[in-house]
Amino acid sequence: MLISHYDYGISLLSQGSFQEAIEVFSKAINTIEKGYKNTGSLFEYRGDANGYLGNYLQAVKDYEKAIELNPDLLKARLKLGVIKLFQFRRFSEAWETFNLVVQQNPRSANGYFYRAAAAIHFVASCYNPKEISWGTERLNSARLDLNLAESYYQSDAEFTVAEISQYRGRVFMLYGDYKLADVYFTTAVALDPTDGTSFYLRGINRYLLWFNNHLVGPKKKGLAPSIADTKTAVKLYESKNNLLGKAIAEKLHHFLIEERESKSMFPDRRAVELYRLV
Image (tube, rainbow, N blue to C red; front, side, top):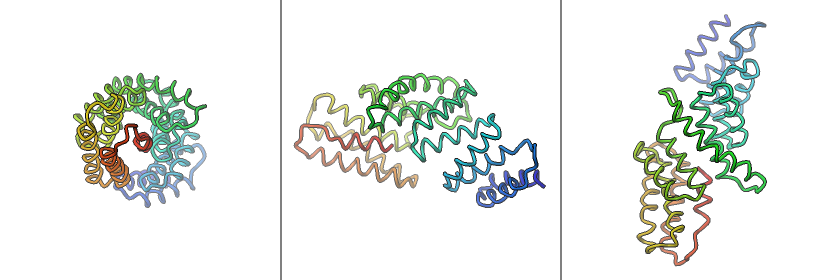
């Protein structure tokens, strides 16, 4: 009966019947016999179903239990880290989780990519001076992690080559090297012209690049590339029904238009704050 629950639950999961899958896996978990070898997998699959339904707290509990029962479940650990990174934005915890992934599998492209992403997002959102040194150290290693992710990249990777370029752009934007960041964001846009985030980030970066060049040229001309990028980002987010992304991109787009008309000669911190959101 337990085996049939296991197989039936996987079938429901593959069909997108997530709530039914949760019920089936829960029944299997409640009737587990001592020594059953797939116990951890039952929790992992139930975590998958909960994750698809947006039940992230329960998914985290399921993945943690799966790993407790079977520490070799690398994918469960990876999925746990992804939720911490993108849903809960607990960047340092996510970094530690992905660090365990690459220790467990030194050729895990996903582990290196997400470990780099966790470090980059941590630094971008960091307000506490005591945490800056930790973040800076991890940011420096993120460049190597992205290289390793690219080296071990395979067709089953959970990220794209365009995203590697995008995150390289993020690194150099945080370093303040806006020219090199622009090169990487432009590469990301060329590799995937349907990704609104690359346009959004390039728009912010070009605004910062313009200010870093001591306001070379009139505002109307200098801010035109940033305004064009954010306008494209809004359209792309809307086409993918990403309402949050669209709202953030619209906010930046309107800010840039206001900034173009402003007579102020100083950069507006709102652009930096908007970067922290993505």
